Amino acid sequence: MSTISEPPRTTFHPAMLINDTRYRGLTFQFVALVLIIVFMAFLGMNLVNNLALAGLNISFDFLGEPANYDINQALIPYSSRSTHLRAAIVGLLNTLLVAFMACITATIIGVFAGVLRLSKNWLVRKLMSVYVEAFRNVPVLIWILMIGTIVQQGPSPRVYLGEDPERGLFLGLFAFTNRGITAPAPVFGPGSLWVVLALVTGIVGAILWRRHVRKTLYASGRLLPNWPIFLILLLPPVIVFLLLGRPIGVDMPDVLANRFNIQGGIELQRPLIALWLALSVYTGAFIAENVRAGILSVSRGQTEAAASLGFRPNRIMNLVILPQALRVIIPPLISQYLNITKNSSLAIAVGYADITATLGGITLNQTGRAIESILLLMLFYLVVSLLISAVMNIYNSSVALKER
Image (cartoon, rainbow, N blue to C red; front, side, top):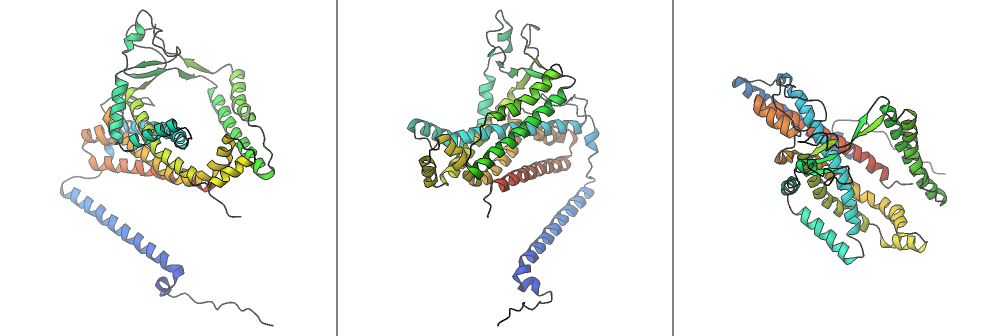
């Protein structure tokens, strides 16, 4: 009878850091990290010494000084007497706003165009091909300027203030002018927070129900109805809204209150619209190609097998193709979201006050603190990019193929 003996345990010695494959990779990574730290420290000390010789120093005290300039669009209260720090925060929020809007819209456009590029209809397929090739091969700055020029060609607000003020309102709700779009604005009163919380609860509940439907389908083959999603999503906020006496109202655009300008509502100004649409349609063309590649990566045999089982085309797309295609789509999609965030720095071309225009533009020119402003800009884009990558990587891990 033979016995299996354990391999002898070897004691660790420094030579194993190079000779042993278990430690060699970690050794090289550690050495590279040390070299990078030393190099960055050398650059930092060189910068400090050169500033000292020039009689300068690194200071962020300028952030507490009055900005002395106006910003055409601000999500928080702001005036020319506000500090440079507040101006930077306004620019930061404007950047996050346009990046978030563009990511959502570009995803919708990209998925729609990517699926239609595989359509059996020749005309639809070619139209989507023309869209993708036209927008991918023209710099985004040109599209920003072009769309900004188109938006600027809209009618003057005086069109809505004439003898027939309702003639230009789209559906009686929206005013399209050369300044932008005036739309109804929500007005939040006491108790509106509970309505928002109820809506968030409904969204979470709808997501959980959708997961339950998918899990049940994969486990037993039984398809539960999707209509409860709408009840779960809408019923809690509607009930809370009615019980609290309708705490959320709507401020409608009013063309009769003033002879010179449209009153009420919320105005999406021309620079925001131009930047938002340009980033959306430009990045949507790249996302469309990612979606098309992801769908084509799924074997045609799986589509034919699902069709032979009686699945409708929309069910085949939602239950067979897309879940597998996401594993190919998500990694490049992360890069496209990062590109949207970084391309938003071109906002100054249409006069949109993002953080590059405020902190990296006007504030830098007024204070002369170029190094401090650029360092803060780099830190902002670095943090935002890492956060986007972290969130998308978590989602990518959730859709990745898991070994049994």
